[in-house]
Structure formats: C-alpha cells, structure tokens
Length: 231
Image (cartoon, rainbow, N blue to C red):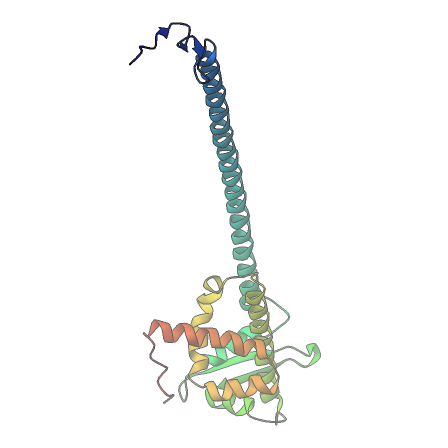
C-alpha cells in the first residue's frame, strides 16, 4: 500500500526535520556567499592596487633611467669635444703637426713646421711625404728633422691612445670622435705598414686599437670590401 508523505511548510518531510533544509539554512548560505563575494572583491582590489603601485614604480624607474642616460650622453659629448680640441687646438704638443704630415702626398706636397721644443733653439723644418716615411723607419733618428717628425707622431699616437681608453671606459662614443679623425685615419691607412710598425715600436697599443676601429668602420661602409692596396 502506498502512503502519501505529507509536506510540512516548516521544512520537514513527514514531520521529521531534513538535515539539509531548515528554517535558518538559506539566510546562512546567503551570508556565507556575501562574505565570499566581499573577500573576492577585496582580493581583486588588492591585486589591482598592487598592479597600479608596481606600474607607477616601473614608470618612475624608467624616467629616472632616461634622465641618467641623457646625463651620461651629455657628458660623453662634452668629453669628446674636449679631447678633440686638445688634439687639434691644444698647446704643448705637436700631435696636430703629425696629422698634417700624414696628409702630405707623395712627391707633391711639402710643409714648413716650426720646432720650438727647445726655446733657445727654434728650428724650421721643410718636410715632405718621403721624409716622413724615412724618419718613422729610422732607429735612431739621423738628424733633427727626423727627430722632430718622430716626436710629432709620438704626440699624435699618445692622444689616440687616450681616445681609445675613453672609448673602452665609455667616457666617449665612437660616433662623437669619428669626425674629423676618420679623414686622417684614411691617410694613415694608405701607408699602414710604416705607421703600424712605428706604433708597435713605441708600444702605443691603444692607438693601434683605435685605428682598427676606423679600419672596421671603413670596411662596413664599403659593404665588407677591404681597402685597396696602396699605390
């Protein structure tokens, strides 16, 4: 015989309270859901807040880093200008005379230089390309003119060593010292064996490294083609 089980509005089946259903179970579940929702919202808010703080910190770091880079770039430009001014316009050395000598054409040009290293014995030397090549290969220099030529190139290669050191330490950038030195580096390359031998002789290794930079730069400009042999 099938008996109907009466349903009680109080949440009981047949007068027996159901374990999962009671007069206070729905409000409790609603409160629990509300708590979970609040906690979830708080977690999301904290996460978003953390992202905003992190974004601001990254932005501030990037701006500070940009200012440092700009300051470093300005100092590099100033140092480049100073070292070039010292070489081309500075007193107390004859490095610039060596640049002029490197630009003398074989069999065509000659130039007069005043040698005032010894104030009581000022001399004027008329020098051509052949005399420059001979002087740089002479050991010891046979006369005052050859000694003067070697002294000028000693000064030049000393300054090129300084520039190489500044490049190595990131005090200057190659693009800032490239001009006008690139022109004279090309003239040196026309007689590279003589100049390189003299650099090795006086152990001006930094000058050799700087000339290597110009050689590599020239090869890149020519699409990887090496310099044509002299003559």
